[in-house]
Image (cartoon, rainbow, N blue to C red; front, side, top):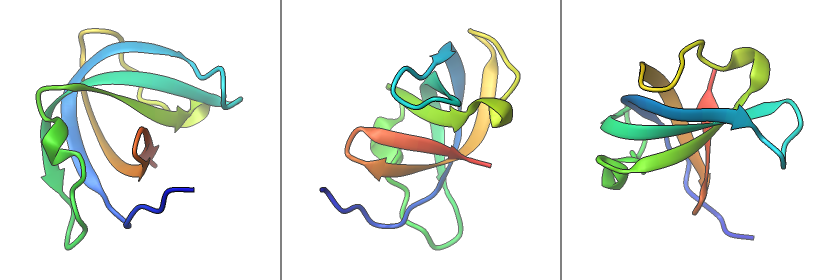
Length: 89
């Protein structure tokens, strides 16, 4: 198992797509084109290298932002592994 440091970032971008997460019941996957990744307090910002790219963010279905494709999105997120990120609610 890969260990990752505690990290947090404020993500601003555009929602590309939204779908039920087939691997995590009760979650949705948000594909977000990252336009800004701002640090949160003193925590490392592991999203900064992904500005300009699309990333998948996992979030509990009932806590998912109510926006549709091509709409602006602003969430706090954290990396949980090399290819795994979650929205913090």
